[in-house]
Image (tube, rainbow over all chains, first blue to last red; front, side, top):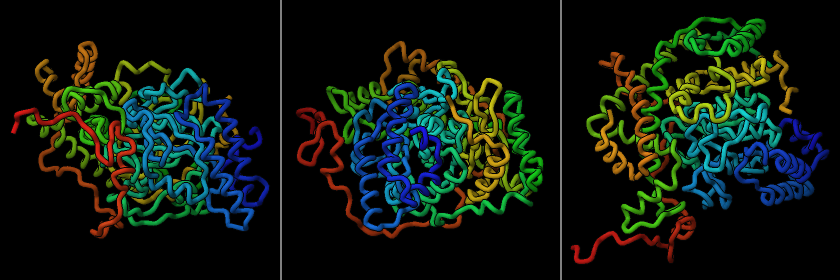
Length: 483
Length: 98
């Protein structure tokens, strides 16, 4: 679909609404790109041509009957494979859920369907969303469309890679410690981690419940805001869901008078100089557009990764106890129930998931809980307080989304700690429950995308979108696509 | 840092049993991870409360009302061994056990 491949959701929707394009044509064009590109990128675990064409046909019939076209009518969308889709395999990138078909749709999937978005596939991910490179998938790694020998980031690597490669203009990812923002930055797309509670998690496979959030991945800022407004809003089926309704950012307001905080800790030693330069270019653009730049301090940043890997693994060890081969998923035979559990889990989970379950079990076990888990929960308070103080003098914080651009496949698989540190700048907002957005802010000399991260106060997504849009316009990177 | 015995106990608690080679590699990696996260010891956390999700305006509880659920048949569609709305599992109690 040469003509349609790089169109935004907004453009596709406009064409569909005007009757210039049918939903079936849009779906077919998208499926053609997927057929051509996915075998190389491995960004999708499951492609759903039948349901896509059926849904597109229904929308076309509705339009022919004079029905109004909802907000995303006919726009192809990819959904991360840890989000439940009724009757469509949902594997979480794990052998233990290989072939599993959920009996219900996640709330976000219901909302996408109601808005007319056409599901074209389920995106690859690190197993149970645990990872920063997409290399922990039981279905093989996804590849970065800008350089096939590099990772797309993780855990929502398939979501980011498919949007970057023009396989769909929209995708859903999930972000626990940076799993939307880091892959968005590695693949040169826009990714939002919403305020904790703003998007329902009903139907999202739980990893670390105090941080998990579903969010949009798109090529443009405006598409991101559009998708966010469709999926956000209260859901009584998620106890952590907030009652605030969706909102549309007032893009025309720009950033005049906005105070942009620059945390020195986000430009620490180890941050690639090209990354720092690209982020600084965005800071200058914002200043030129009427914002003021202020220095802020987030003094506990260097403790965030340690805090996260205690809290998240503790929660994961509890959440993943449900995979025992009884009610769903694969089952290995055992002489008794205990042996069956053990074999099912040992054969079904990959190495990273086992590592995290064991670390989580350790930090919660008698004699260690206070030293690890309780200390981490206190340190989490300090990290949240850092942000509260920073927001006394700033409205939005700007820094890099990741310390460096995408790294080569296989370069960190033997060193989990090095892998964890690639999330150093995304983890703090996760711990504090704040919204944060990653947008493309430049390219390295090697042609790899660089992402900047905006972090805001709770419920300030509209401000993040306005700010990112000013940079997007000023940088003019939208016409650059991977070969 | 992590004795063989401790690691065995950990596996038991987590309902995992790793083959010997995998066990050795994971044990080393987990030791490094625990060593890294141990850096929190350097912080003075006296008097700092544990993190609690801030009560953001708009948090709500739903009414305590019963609603229709999935039903056993649909819920067990994905079970490896389901019969007539029930899941079959290996024997839990041994013979002659009360």
